[in-house]
Amino acid sequence: MMQSVLTGAGAVTSVGRGVAATCAAIHAGIARPRRVDELMVVEPESQEVIALQAHPVHGYMEGFSLLGRWMRLARGCVRDLLSSGSYSEVGSRRFWESTGLTVVVSPPDDQVLLTDEGKGLERIQDEFLAPLYSVLGLPILERNVELLPVGHAGTAQAFEQGMRRFAARELERVLIIAVDSYIDPLRLAELVEAGRLKTEEQPVGFMPGEAGVALLLEAETSARRRSATVSGRVLAVATDLESRDYPRVQRGRALADCLQRILDRVAPSSTFKGDLYNDLNGEAWRAQEWGRVRVRVGQRLDAARWHLPCNSVGDVGAASGALGVCLALHARDPFQDVAVPSIVLSSSDLGEVGGIILEPVCT
Image (cartoon, rainbow, N blue to C red):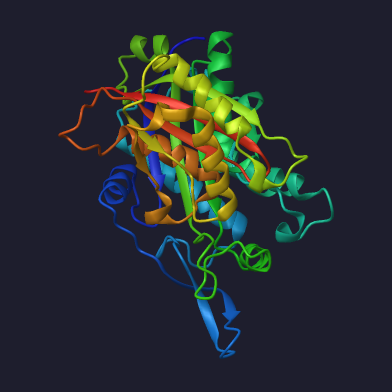
C-alpha cells in the first residue's frame, strides 16, 4: 500500500485549545476534571444530590447540546489545524478537490438523539454532517465526504480507507475530523443507568470527556511534491471486528490480531520498544480485553512505554484514536529517541478495533 504521512493536526480538549497545548499538557500529566451540571446523581445512603465529575472543555462548550457540541469541537480543531501549519494551498480549489473529508463520530443512539427507531444516523447526517460540510467552506467534492459512526476505532478505519484511496489514485489526502462528547444529559443518564461511569459510589468506570481532533493524512508522494511539513509517517494500520456473539468481557481476539499484524510489520522478531497509546478508561471490560491481548501477544510489549490519555482528559470516545495519533507525534520528550515508533490502539463499544503504528519525523 502507498506510503502515507501526516501533514497537519489540530485539537480542542479539556486541557488545551490547540494540538500543541493539548499534547504538552497530557504528556506532563495535567488534568482539569470538574463537576458538571448536566446530570445529578443521588447518593444512595445520604440521598444527597451530587454532580458527576467529568472533563468538559470549560469556557468553550457552555450552552451547546450534543450535536452542537460536536459542531463546536469540529470547527475548533479544523481551525487549529489550518492555523498551525503552512497551508498556502488553502485557497486552491485543486488542493481541496483532491482531498477527502472523513468525519468520525460515535454510533447513533436513537434514545439520546431523540429520534424514532433507526433514524439516529439520518439525524447525524442531516443535522451535523451536512451543516459541518457547509460551514467549513472548503471546496471538497461532496462525493468525497464520508461519515464513520463507529466510535473509538474510527480513526484506524479512516486511515485504512484513506490509504486505500491513495493507492487507487482517487485522492491525494484526507482531512479526518474525529469528535465526540459524553457531556450530554441524556447520554450521561444512559451511562449511569448502565453502571459505566466512575462515581463516588462506583470506583470502577470511566470519567466522561469530550474532544475534537483534526488530522491531515496524505500520500507521501503528494506531500513531497508540495514540500509539505511532515510530522509523522504511517508504518502500518490494521482493523478488525470482535464477534458480537460474546459479551464485551470476553473480547480480545480481534484486538490481539490487529496488534500482531502491525507488530509483524515493524518488529517481526523482536520486542517493541516504543510508546503505546491505549484507550483503557477504567471500565472492567476494557481491562479484561487488554489482559487477553497481553496473553496472546506474549512478551512482545514488555519493553513498551504505556500511555493512558484518559487520565488527563477522560474518555473522549470517537476522538480517542485521533488524539492518540497527535500524542504520538507532538510534544515528545526531547531526551528520548525520536525515531522510535508509537502504537495507537482503539476498541469501540460495539466491537470495532484498530491499531496504527506511526514514526515521528524530525523537522
